[in-house]
Image (cartoon, rainbow, N blue to C red; front, side, top):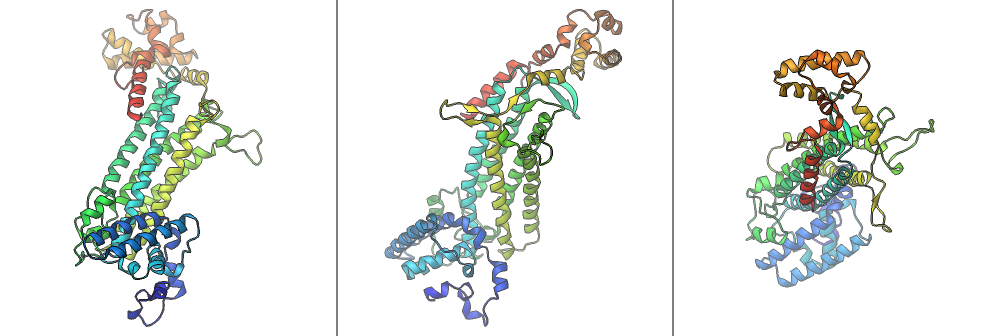
Length: 477
């Protein structure tokens, strides 16, 4: 086949066909304008394959040198923006192969020995996704550090803790933020786990059944820094579990971001007024000049549905496919690419929105979350947040918890009728509910006393929160 023939995708297998592919079908089946982002992975995988072919005496040393020279030029052309991507060549792989053959002749044609586009694309996607997972892991770390930074400044700030969006018990604002650190730390763990299964080599599976050439697949895996090879050629070319797993992990990470977004949106509203975010993360209204809208958290909440939708799409893509490779699998890339882009962009912007932006002049971060501690504490005082503390106080006096629970319910009812907090009820009134109540009850009924009392591992007492911050500092260092 001549070099010019490779310039026409329809002629890459033209001996069998009596007519060229229609322009409509060409556009419908082409993937080059979205899979060209795999170019570096394609070159990297091809160079490792070529090096192995030469080591196995399948191609000559001069062919290897030509392939390496040609790939170096192609890389330079792509990086400089001078590479011509051709729709006729359908995808990133044929575009690069055609250019290589233009540059080095027959050596470029020999590169494809012992492989198929089926195992080639599976390898490229894995290599690309592995590197993207590494970037995402770094971004997850940045977001966790930003949250820990804000938490460390707000250990003593009291926030009303909610269940059912009703005031439940007082918590440290830092404790609340650290709950998200835990979520994102699990997301990071999942990314590490997904990376391990992604980082396996399908190359050498060829079209579906392996190849007659004496390939050294383990050598290629080692060259590419992969943790092993796919052990079954049919599975190697058709498996997209790693893409689904990644998108599932990304979906869960976006769900965590969405939950945080929902709280930021509530906290920023005038009805709460707990926090502010920097103006650059908000927008105004076209009609209401007083508005600062939390567009970034709202959009992140919306983009979560987009990523979860990609997960559903990938699962549906695979559910009816027989072994081995099918053209359906071309549809794995756009949802996977968009999931990666969306997650990276969201993590990057949230890390800055939470922790602020580095000021080169001072070396400090500025413009992160601004906390209104007074508003938080005032809200915590509104919902009888220390009612459980009164019940615990009575239990320690010998009352069974269920009886204590009922007694406190009557006390709350009395406080409601008097339009005051439990801590504002006179001692004589409290003693009317149970004679064992003494003056020390007011320490239990204070927000600060409630906070300090929860001094167990994982609790909201400031001493425990500081210990958790220290643990996260060590883990994230």
